[in-house]
Length: 163
Image (cartoon, rainbow, N blue to C red; front, side, top):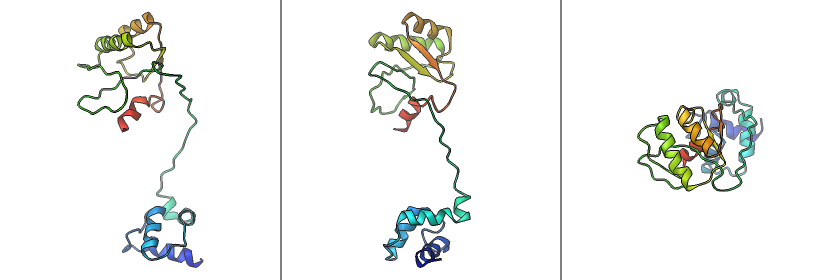
């Protein structure tokens, strides 16, 4: 074990230190507080990967290939979200809903679709989109309705919720 690894080990395994059992960034800050500037984050991460107590507690992140969603321009895609009482910072078409029944969603969609000319609607498998009223409206307007069964692919409104 070289001198740098000893210094990292002293900070990582010493419970009285603020960066004890923390990640690489916090360890580097603790090293800088002690006046050690010559150990980079890359070296700390490499050292942490060799420590069982760090690597066993870290959750495995798996990234699967997803189908790309390509939108050519405005009015190309639509999704549904209830943002009652929230400040909205994105350009959206919002119609207040009393509830998410098929009849109410069909009325709201008809208001939105009168203003714009969507070609596709992508939604999750929720009952608010999978009903005869919405299906008839979309068929009459010649709009393709894609229902995704994958939670990750139904991410447009979820991404909007994060912002």
